Amino acid sequence: MNLVVDEVVSLHSDNLSHVFHVPTSSLYAMDSETMSILEGARDGLHTDQSLQKLTADSGLDPAEVEDIIDNLVKLRLLVPPGETGNRGPLADRPQSGRSMGNLVLHVAHTCNLGCGYCYAEQGLYKGKATLMNEERAHEYVDWLFDQCDPETKSLGITFFGGEPLLNLKVMKSAAAHARERADTDNKSVRFSVTTNGTLVTPEIVDFLAAIDCVVTVSLDGIGKTNDRLRPFHSGRGSYDLVLDRIQPLLERGKVAARVTVTRQNLDVVDTVTTLLERGFAEVGCSPVDAKNPAYDLRGEDYEVLLDGFGTLSRRYIDEAVQGRKYGFSNIANIIKAVHQGHNKDYPCGAGLQMVAGAPNGEMSLCHRFVGEPDYVLGNVKEGGIDSHRRLQILEDIQLSERSDCSSCWARYICSGGCHHVNFLFEGDPSRTYLTHCDYLRAWYRMGLEAYAEIMSRNPEFVGEFIDPGFLCNQ
Image (cartoon, rainbow, N blue to C red; front, side):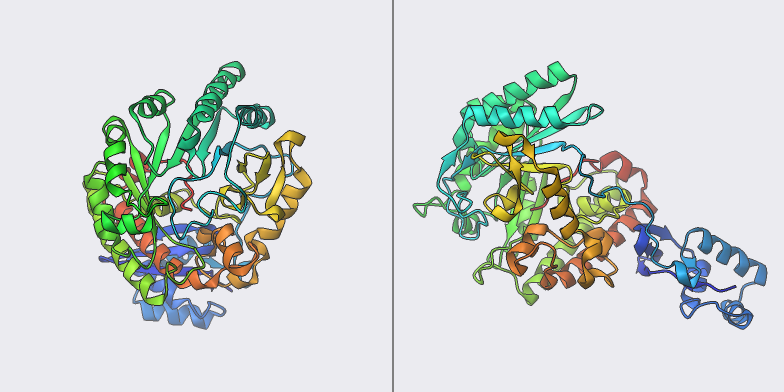
């Protein structure tokens, strides 16, 4: 016998013991005897003497120890020394001919708000204020349908900006054209929009309902906190207007809120609680990445944020145990990733299943890279994506090329972090922004523990309430 413990993380909470197997992103419940054997084998089982010592220390019969070891070998938690870290086949390897299933349509490169932290420079994306025209929008829609795999039955279009509702005419035209193509091609098309909510009218509510559009509203706190962070260009606050304008949306369907967390709005518990009470179906919080000390989080800020996330996660768990969904989407997204065995070289679908289209025809790695010439994949006016360029960029930014991540236990859940955050702070999406790492490891551990407890106390919840789709938190 010559076995070693593969790369694992032990989790203990509420009298539960679990082991997270890093190479496969698998989570296993452990009884006390099995956990004792696994922990006792940390120094390796290289000789008969080491096995005898492990058996004696465990207080179990040799036959019981042998059965436990056999099971640990089957789970690949104990492996021969030369076989540690074996991930197996990955689902997200870049392929030059792979089709895209999702298009982020930048219908408006302008915005009526003046958020100081905005990575898109108030929607201008390093350019001038521009609205996409109908012809360009139709070109993008046709490209999406023309290039997709014949077996793909559902495609997604997200209306984005800037503020997309500033170009309602083109949104309507693009949606109508996409639905016509879907009927012709025997496919379905899903719509979503990210908006600041200030321009919502009864007409827009009816339009969004008619196309079954998933709506995400950006709000960064309650009352004056949001007004300070998300003002109009005149300086006037937007919170009361937004809540008034979107009330018909809240009454008609599921609306999500997206909160950008800065140094100025760290009370995520109050924000999430209040927005859920106001009728939002779910609320997600994302730390700001502004490269601006007035907004960017520091070490102690991450501690405050994690405390708040811990409180909200506890609420999520307690509701899940009772068979109810609590609308804190951050923890839901981690639980979904763990349940699906997220073990990928890429943190999201950017360039793999999703591309962003700008008003000028340029197609970028994702919505956050619009305006960055080095990450333009092609032009819809010139046939779409350059497959060679796309593959080259994807190979450069894959996790397996990053030495900084090679020893991190969370690397296959995190997958190196948001490409654009790495680009913003490190100048290169292939270089991991390490400042986030301690926060992310703590958050992923919290998510693993939440998943473990829910699966122990009400396993049916995950299959029933966790949305199988992919959401970008950026």
